[in-house]
Length: 406
Ligand code: SF4
Ligand code: SF4
Image (tube, helix red, strand yellow):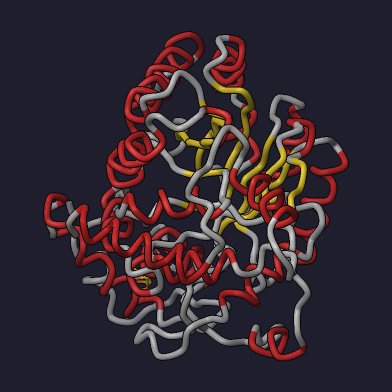
């Protein structure tokens, strides 16, 4: 897409959707939107709902941006001009290009007008950190974080997360905690946190127990079978002063692989924000229309009876969202990382993000056709997924060169 096209789309979007907030100054966008709303002619625009991110004290509109899948800087720019303040990225997204794109978008903007969260994985996910301990691990982790700052072109971020934790011990590693505290002390990260999208309640409780973190970014959506326990864990974190951010709120975006049945995005987003202990959500969007749709709920998160119905709460629909419950794993004699493969499948078919799917599949220790030697599949999915079919389908991505998606 050319810059001219981007600019045209951006302008059209702003013209159609919102109140011309292009002249964003030193005040964070949403707060400025509220101020402008109050100052302009009737009817007075409703104010964005802004919540406090736990003990960080950061004031953030309930809708933020998960930038992971976005590759159009004009959409990120439009998000900031619309009133979104927090941009959520990670070292690994698009092999660093996601951070670079954000760096280009925020360059020259008043630093206090936006917030950045980025993520660095620990040894449980990052191969180059495996086998390292103590000072060596601390140093290597911090070097990875410095690379993030370099790509972003910033001297600090608001939140540095330890990325992708699925077990209590992942967040309890003393060398990683030491590294995060050093990043904070050096002023490179104002606050530190963890991310989790598997075994979330246990990881959240362990995080609270360390007393070392300020923020938790957790998968949280209406499809999770264990959402009641997750809600309790989130409440415990909030009571301990941690700020909670929700991700994976759209639960796969579609009910079906063929993309014929979209999930009601507004309803899904409102559902998670109806938990008052969630300060903000980071739905991933890639287009101006999706930005408009997500932002449209920022002033009113009341759920209508139809929206509640659309979420099909309590129904055993397979869909694309894997619960990461691991109940299938013991049934696979090869011990395949089925939950990761199913997450990758969701990235490919739900979010249509082949690059993220490719990166995740590529990071797993599996053969080209992992199910090839199995006459029949003995791994049973609690949600009714045809596991072997999905594993075979998604593992084909391993044969595709990474540059193909660049
Ligand atoms: S078919 Fe694949 S997923 Fe199923 S048991 Fe065999 S190796 Fe495991
Ligand atoms: S594939 Fe099914 S059983 Fe396995 S982790 Fe996902 S939802 Fe649970």
